[in-house]
Length: 122
Image 1: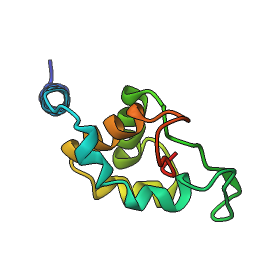
Image 2: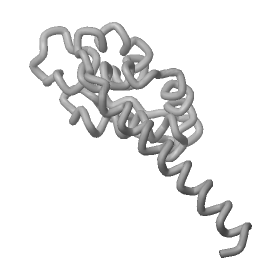
Image 3: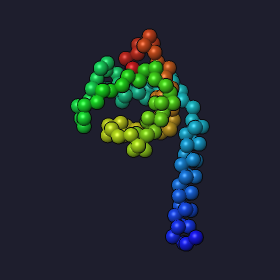
Image 4: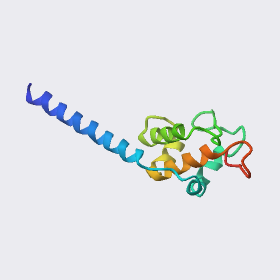
């Protein structure tokens, strides 16, 4: 194997291991719905308005989050943070979140139902 190919194989393996370590670390984080309640203020401005649609950078229907699957919310926030999902406002918010914040927010929204008391945070 030539040096060029060998070097790139090693680099790719290191990145794969780093990604695995980050995923394993995130998997160790347990969400706390009560803690998440204090972290959703930035979400309510869009996701707490029934039928809200954004106007920039394109018209987009903002989904309600209350009752959504916890793992889906975590995956979506991580994808925005990483840049795999594209919506600049969400990317800006997600990059400011720690793994614990993401887990807490996901736990909070997953615990909500349409009949939850005082649930403007859908």
